Length: 415
Image (cartoon, rainbow, N blue to C red; front, side, top):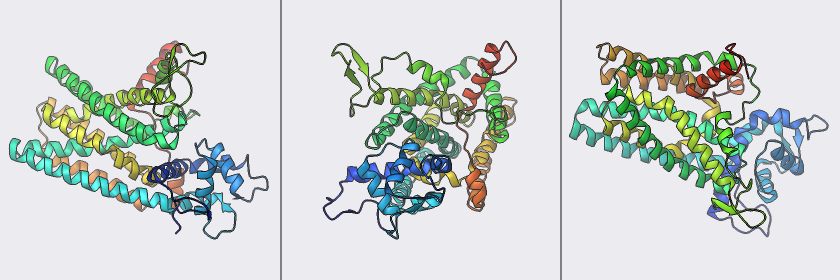
């Protein structure tokens, strides 16, 4: 298979590492939008054959709202056109992109990096075992596994935000790095706020338990109340409403956070600032979902925070893995739902004085997630094509329902 980064013209210069990263990012964005290809083809494929040439491929990227230069589009097209026929079967685009050199390289890098971070995490957990005992060590590992599984939601949101703001491929890594750094700070804040709330008023644990059970139900039921929602690719209204209050330039200015106004006076926030603000706000929303889960496992601040940070630090490599494989993991979301339900039930039982051992918790959670992955690997192609991951946190879904009920005069309908 020809690598997407190989020169396709005799006078093409050898691509730099930045070129490689940028093209991989474009390929990942394309992979994530392959489910929309059939609709996009209606606007560019006049004869309905599904075969598109290089120019139509560039138009397809525009229809899918994928930011890409003409040169990058030409390189990617040449890579996917394995037989050099000058056309591609757009209906087979997903498999062609998945098997391209760019995606394979990115996936291998993600596996290698995640494996290294996992080894470091396990070594750290061995230190926890030596210093704090087996119970805390098992709870650290359990919390790490739970947070890693819940991080899948964060990655869906990252992909949605990058597409919504049309983030240039060369800035995706910058956004990821800032987003992960912000998550480390925000998670620490929410963890200690949660612990303070529990210490001040222990019955709040029943609230956490109920919320986790609601999250589990929502994921298992598929949030049936939103069946008619056509805004699947929209940023939550509560976030966009806040962004509208910022003085924004509406443009990217490299890695600058602020720029001068059009008349040379005043200061405007760039699209990069808007993107990072959106990531931070969404992380706050998802923290409301995930923090109760780790508080249900252990109440030691060190164990909770360190396990959470270990999971957050692996987000970038997890992004590389799941941005490729996520459309195939059709049962992982349901497995995560079962885990949330189990953790919520565990918390409720322990508040009532019934202890659930750390070893049993880890075994149930690990086997459930592993089962979800194994079932996904055995799923047929139709199930994978029909799979649409949830894009709302339980908190956001609950907030939307309450707000809709208030605006609708208590009827619970849309505003």
